[in-house]
Image 1 (cartoon, one colour):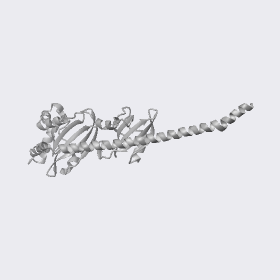
Image 2 (spheres, helix red, strand yellow):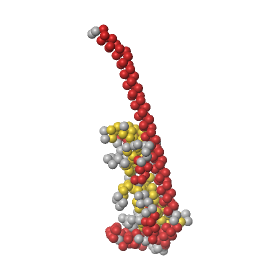
Image 3 (tube, helix red, strand yellow):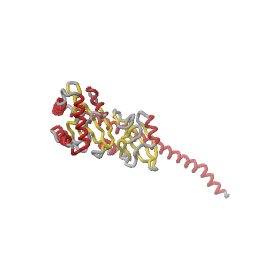
Length: 307
C-alpha cells in the first residue's frame, strides 16, 4: 500500500467516519424526536376527539330530555295510560300479548301498526325527525305499560317493556337516563345509538321516549378535522369490537391495541402495524355511561396515522 493510500485511509478513519457516525446518530435522534412529536399530537387528537364526542352525546341527551317535556306528548301518554285504568293486570297482559303477536306476525301489514304509525303523535314525531333526517334513525314513544303509542317507523313489535333499555329507563316508575349502544340497525341500514329518557309527570315516569341517533356524524367530528390528518378514526368498545370506524377493512383491534386499552384507563399512544405499515395509534376514553348489547367495560376513541 502506498503512502498516499495510507494517508487517505487515515483521513477517512480520523475525519470522515466519525462524521458519518455522528450524522447517523443525529438522524436517528431527529427521527426519534419527530416520532415522539407526532405521537403526542395523535394522542391529543384522540383526547380532543373524545371530548367532542362527549359533547355531542350530551347535546343529544339534552335534546331528548327537552322533547320528553313536550306537553302534547305528555298528554298523549297520559291518555294511553288511562285506557288501561281499572283493568286487571292479567287482562292487560292478555290484551298486550294479543296485539303484540299479531303485530309481529303481520309486520308492516298489521292494521294496528299502521294506525299507530299514522296517528297525530307519530305525525308529530315524523315532522320532528324531518328537521335533520341524517341525524335521526327513528323516534318512538311508549306508555307506562311498554306499548308503542307513536313512532316515525313501524317497529318490529308492539311491546317494548321486555327490553333492558326500557326497564332501565322506566326504573320502576322513578325514571332514569339510558344510552343504548345498539350497533347496526337493520331496519334503517346504519349504526345507531339510542338515547332513552323517561316521560315524567308529577315526579313519576309515565312513559318512555327513545331516539335512535345515527352515529356516522359522530365519527366525522374527528375524521374531517383538517388538523388531525389521521388515516383511521374508530369508536371502539374496550373489549375490542368496533362501534363505528372510518377503516372499512378491519372489524376489531390488534392484540397489542387490545392489551393496551384493557390496561389503560386514560389516554395514550402506541406504535403498531396495519397492512404491513407502521402506524401511530392514539386513544382516549369517552367518558359516558354507554350501555351496550355486547359485553364491554367502556368506550374509547382510537385514531391512527401511517408513518
